[in-house]
Amino acid sequence: MPLSHDHIRTTVDTYLARHPYERDQLGALLGALDDPTDIASRSTFTGHVTCAAIVVDPLGHVLHVLHLASGKALPPGGHAEPCDESLAAAALRELHEETGIPPQAVTPWPGYETVPLDIDIHDMDARPSKGEPGHVHFDLRFLFRLHTADEVPVVLQEEEVGGIEWRLADRVSSTTLREKLLKLPLQVKPEVANTSALIYNDRGEYLLHLRDYFPGRIWEPGMWSLLGGGREPQDATLEDTVRRELAEEAGLDIDDLTPFGTEYASDEGGATVSIAIYAGRWNGDPRELHLTEGVMLAWFAADDLHRLRIAPTTGDLVRRHAASLPANTAPLSGLAPQEERRASPHGTVLNAIGVHLYLERPDGTVLLGLRHPNSAFAPSTWHVLAVH
Image (tube, rainbow, N blue to C red):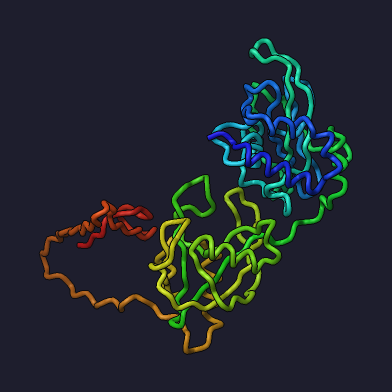
């Protein structure tokens, strides 16, 4: 559904709280927000919102694209679409459409996750070929950092973009944007903004979260991971971040959370992501928690992690923490010892009888199990319970 007036107004009001001296020059935007017309729609020719992605690489260069329609080098951006969940999401979508740079290759600049760095109002010439009269763009510019200094693969939107250019901040085309960028420490890496919770019980087991299987949309789809997430503007500390994430994702409130260290993982784009780890003890039943993201929560002993689809870095982290626990909380393996198999008589023809257990609740939901990655049949897939 289209972006709401409330979302746009809240974003603009938050921006003006930081830049109150710009209220007069944004009068046209504020007036449009008081009007019942849909300023998120590109067909509102009295003026509508556009969103741009200001992407800064680790060396402080700012991404520009050559827009064929105007002949100008500008930050990638464009109109909002009904599929956009937020103004910042619209900027990321436009970045991907115009340059091929995926959203996973960038991260919001700390403190600018939901607030634009700059808002600009400019006139657009009429385009009779597209049936567009002259109109006004209210351009909201969101700030992102590119994860890597290496060259990023680019796939241009050829019908609209003629090339890209990385410019130093003092050569950015927009005056207001340039002034704001020059006030930021563009070559200083942002602080750690991600957290994970290493939750264990008195049996030495660890609480793991099975993530949704949405390839290309989320990090580590369909894998077991730790609860946690990214820092938001209201979080005063990283401990506030991890506590908020535990409450939002699972309704969990851990009395004692202590820092365990900082880990480094690689996202889908190959960039290094730093994660602050907090450890805490909890002895509850995960089946009683209200999970708002992912598939399920479950306890696992460190010795059983090889059975799971889990990132090597996460598995190593759990094992290191398990090794640091006192003997009375040493991890226990849930696996029974294998029975010795007797040799088959000579001439035996091997046959297998398979049994599937189909369990269905009254509401129609069916119990499935996630098969081991090394399974000979249907590895790493959800399947009804089966045995030979």
